[in-house]
Image (cartoon, rainbow, N blue to C red; front, top):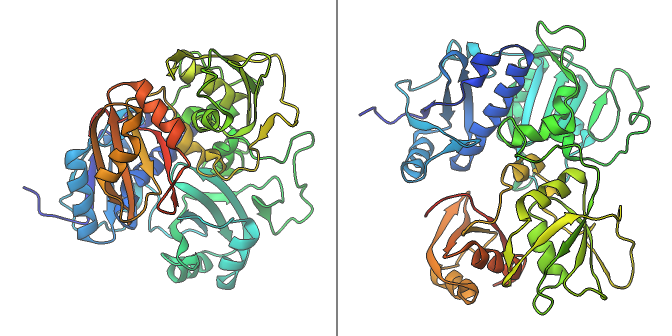
Length: 458
């Protein structure tokens, strides 16, 4: 048996990288790196990550051996996977990753551009905030921010490599604010950042005359933001324009493992849905919000007075609306099979009988949008509960939910020092009822959050 090490060996990461090659392979490599970080960062700080492209493998170095042991103990009982593909983990024969190990990927090889991942984001992070944090360590030329599955990230380009080294040494592992917004800093393998707009999300401090937005393009962040990084960076050896801006559908495809779910085009621009065959005696706007917000942000919901089993739901954009149609059409709720279709109405007009959710902090896609897209699925028998009280027990969770159906199994566990839970019902309809009725309710002073889990068993 291999001796415990803080270095973890991950196999079956993804053969697509070695098969595709070229700029798209570099993009896919970055996506898979983020997914690996997502699997292991819950157990502690990751200090190094090496993608072994030719072998479809990766090496991950945790900050210490106990963190690595915790992760392997967890995955001994839970099969880890990336985009539907099972990956296999074990202790590496390496006790430490050296600079030579890092030569195939981003890591400790110094560069004047830093890749910064910010964990536990509780306050807004803008270009100005990042500039205040990083500029004391040298002349910052450019900053680009973007949202990925690993969380909020930024690329920060210094005038000199030494400034980047100084900043990484001084700031690695530090918090921007007390108790949150922790910095995880690596050297990027990019040669130059190309910034097209000066705004809260990107800035070229050497060219203050850049426009704030592309003409005719709204300033609101959309579902294409997962690909924003690739709209503005060029890697070594790339021709000018070698990295083309990824269309929205391609950015979302990354969240679904390289291809959109069957039947989804990614080009739909109709945001409003007509939902029919509801149970008018048991449904209300908040219950509809709890269900449909799994697939996108909710703007407004209106129950139709003249047709009490009908409702209009306006989603944040056309792609989110298309996801809701795809995953919820035919779902069972309160003994009724839902009909979910696109409405002829482009939006819902604000009125006395309309509930507005556009500013609700319960909308799930305001943060970690790519991660939430990846978790989209049809209703399952298993639900995941988070933001639970720290002293919650399994019995209390069962008591809370058992009125909605037969509970087959349940589990309470702790991750990142926060209590979470899994509850498996006998049917998908029972799980859906529990979700729509108990999501966002208060339990011992905590507002609990519920979503479907794609785990097959506990």
